[in-house]
Image 1 (spheres, rainbow over the protein chains, first blue to last red):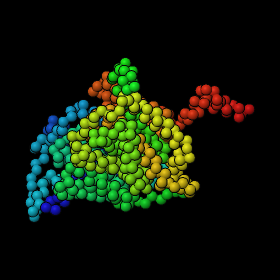
Image 2: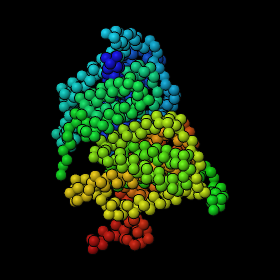
Image 3: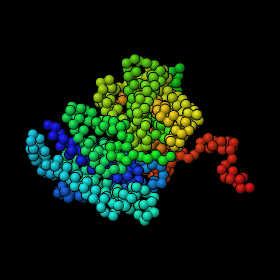
Length: 291
Length: 307
């Protein structure tokens, strides 16, 4: 029973982690809480659904196309709503992000309607695999597998490639990186593209998992993913993964323990408790106060 | 007296009256958040949760005790301030975005808890009876607005307010100057949540139906947008921001379907073209003094210096 719930938790948690990575990367580079990120995830889910349901595309092709669409969307949002605000107060950028988020969710509601839509049943064949006394569906394995692959790919890009090095440099010190000849605008656009692609993948996977895609799915998922990013230590990529998994598992265990009506509060309760003990998150660096 | 006031309001278009009350409640809420975020510099993303605490406290005081409304509002404010101080005490040690996410987390927890309590009637929400007072609601609301503006202005210009501004400027320097940062932060949080509670109480009795889901994240963001749009730390800014954003949904109503779309776009445009808010960086006292000719314009002053 516990093992079963653990698997459920890891599957849910890896989708949180996918979304949380976008928050944490953007925050690490321009210290902006990108509140529109949850809406990018929602758009990704809708694009995936549209391609599978209307154009009868294979689910994997649809996921890749959704990721590409959201990359473009993420870069566009940064260009229109955040870049002009880079020199003004962080709160203005935050409000701008919220404006984008309201805009996108209303647009989705107008285009796709207010009711939740499901993926067609033949989108991905779901079989149950018995391991011991636990049932694991192939869908859960797919989610865990794809999330793991994407996270490893991200880690590779950030640690081993030239643009990844530029990202790390920019996140360390924006101005010095610019002085060293790094085109910070390109780096920031690239960061948004990467984060948005991961969010879109998360959106398609969650759409498959709960078989529901709706215009307001971005808000709560975004908040929880953001909580996951902060829990792990915002700005830290392994932290976001750990935070996402931890929140997913506690949420599923909490529901299994009979607190299902408190479902949405469990993640935040854990977050608040952890922050009170470790004010910069689990893997967060200690902030050095300059005097 | 009650009937006379009621008759007076009877001449005003009820739709217009409703917008005016919405604006009044918006101003009270915005002033509260402005003390926390604008004056003390502590970003709170959970203001609506305190509005929710206030709304339910006030509604229950009327339903269960039939308390007179003026007393009710005061008790509601104090209860909410108590809750605010209780929550603020541990979390105000956090700074910046960590504080923001913590307040957001608390707001979600408050919402979910209220959705599961019997006393708040769970997800069904509460029907609120009309307030136990002869003064009509619109006048009540605007009396509170005037009081709130006066009190917050006093705070801005007092020794206490200057300490809060010092914390906003630089916490460590403020600490070094002998300001008890932790205590001042909790006190400013309590004042802000007091106003949130009062605003919530007014809202509950004006709308006459409250549901925990009404006070979610988007409501907090609404209030935050008001003070950022108006200009952080500015009282006239809060009033203008609250007026615009509380009235905007009504004036955008002619676009019906596109209303929220335009609202989202407007927020982005406002921030791009006026990133510090409409009143940001404008010293209102100075503007007034200049207008009545008590203070020369900056340009004239510069010219004088050059001579």
